[in-house]
Length: 130
Image (tube, rainbow, N blue to C red; front, side):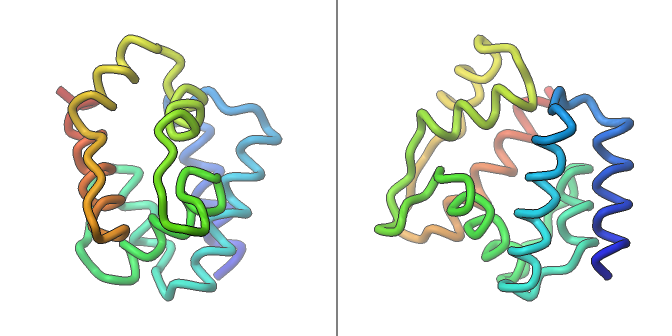
């Protein structure tokens, strides 16, 4: 399973539109793999999300929170850090005006961490695709 995740994510990064360095790509893959082990989400769920297909399975929502915690976007107390989220987004899409617009439309923190992460990622994809 580990090799499939690595291969599929590397394929996405190779042909996707993100601007990550090789070291950043490696880190993303490691974080995703570590969180897959913790959350019970599947590689297919993650890869589908990169393609804009989001499952509302609890395991996938836990995956989103796990990744954001690993990135420092969500801290131990469950607080979101918009500035850190913006830094990570700029690595994927180096267009600050677009990122600011996405955050303005999509950065809505709710009481439920998993639902917040899920709603944000769906909104980010919708705004970016429009």
